[in-house]
Amino acid sequence: MNISGIIIGLLSFAIIGIFHPIVIKSEYYFGKRIWSLFLVAGLIACFCSVIAANNTISALLAVIGFTSFWSIKELYEQEERVRKGWFPANPKKSYPAGKTTG
Image (cartoon, rainbow, N blue to C red; front, side, top):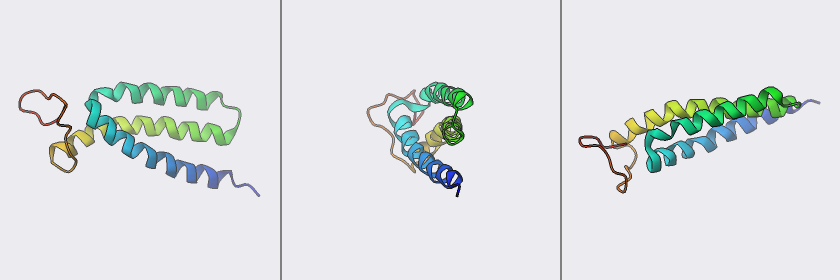
């Protein structure tokens, strides 16, 4: 019996769920300027996916990589959610005049 598909599906679900609060906290403390960190993490994970010998590990690294790429988009959308008041803005962050978020 091959359960690698179930393992990949379950861990993909967990990875995406873990990245959601990471994006929220990243935007709260650093703003969208941290997007390059997600880019580098995604590139590293995708590169490691290509060289991984195990197919399950390779697939999970690819999921991490592309979730990191998707997180860049979510950072910008999170900034918009904060601007709309759906999420709290960080009162300790300094924002440019006329803007709610960094």
